[in-house]
Length: 108
Image (tube, rainbow, N blue to C red):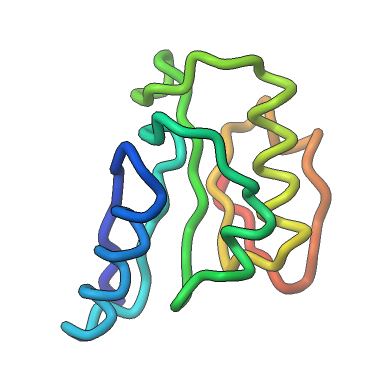
């Protein structure tokens, strides 16, 4: 299976690229929400996804751009899980704080 990582400053750009990739036959994309420069409703975003996703929010120490509050980051990952994202990628220290959902696989 091919998974393409998408990191864009706006959610509209991220969605447009996912739609383009779906049309090209890419079955799975990773949403790097730490690249967004705007605030989004993660649950609504996940519900509007055009295809399967991995939701990821990386901190700088993990190779990402998230500089916000850790509680907010976990809340966003939790919202993705509760909205039924196919996968959520999280670090070992965050995993115990995130719920399990049969619709979502956790990548730790």
